[in-house]
Length: 170
Image (cartoon, rainbow, N blue to C red; front, side):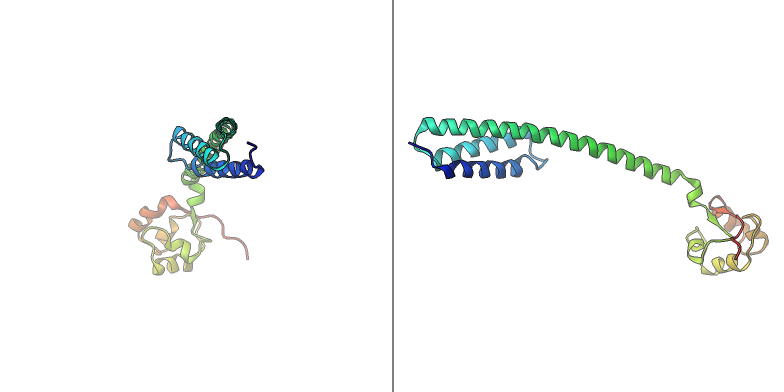
């Protein structure tokens, strides 16, 4: 008995759908995914396409072999993707760490900072920020104490975050 041509197409489409449905989700073990795919392909081939056991067996064997090859390829691609993701994640984590440890990026210039930036400092409210801005320019960050913009105690809480660079000329 000759196998209808549409049978191979249906098996190919079905096996590809099973492959993407069962092989790609990460939570199911790889052996389980392969077993489900193979059993489903064999069942479909034997029921849908032929009454001749030899032909059905041959087609199921061919479909199974193709699924095995596709599964191996997919597993290799998953491993490659995981390695790339690991490398990217490591680089991103290192960048975050460097950014957190970069003191210069967290420094606030008392001569150029806006009100919002000053208010981002611990203990600096709108009134203190306005006082710091009003008493500019500062030759050193500690001058915000001597000019009366903040108390010495308030200054000690924010001193590690402050610099006093020259204000840009206008």
